[in-house]
Amino acid sequence: MGKLIKYLSPILIAVSVALVFWCVFTTPEVPTVENATAVSSLLMWGYAIAAVAIVIAVLAAIWDLIQKPEGIKGTLFAGVAIIAIIVGAYFIANGHDYQILDIGNQTNFERGETVIADTSILVAYVAGAGAIISAIYSAISDALK
Image (cartoon, rainbow, N blue to C red; front, side, top):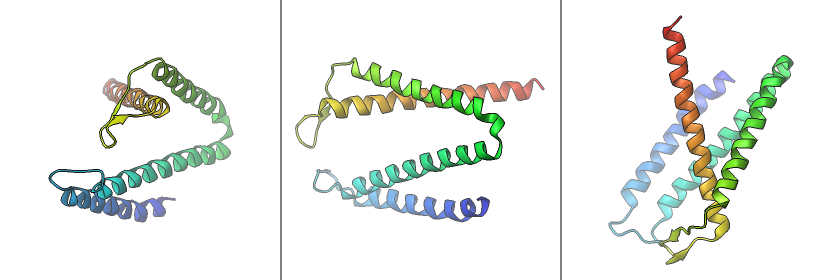
């Protein structure tokens, strides 16, 4: 697994950097929906990378669980916590009644698209806060040892 990551990481980074440069240097001064191919490709690449990362994370967790079955309690707790965060974010997002402007089509996004986008943003906020709290806790606990 280490060799795969060792060789695959530079390739993925190179493709990402190439797409960023393509996006930056091919975007016209006045961007329009018709000229958004570079941005669209960059977004699709980001979605693909995120999907692959999620699949790898889940498979790695399952593989670790197969090798060390005593960690099932922690895995189940983490899974329930993730589901609870997503469901909570969905209910919070569904409770709002604002509309997001779709500039390209001069209209508003549909309700479902707005709820999914808001849910994703709320989950990202919780994940970011968790990462920050984890980093602070780790630094403090290492300093006190």
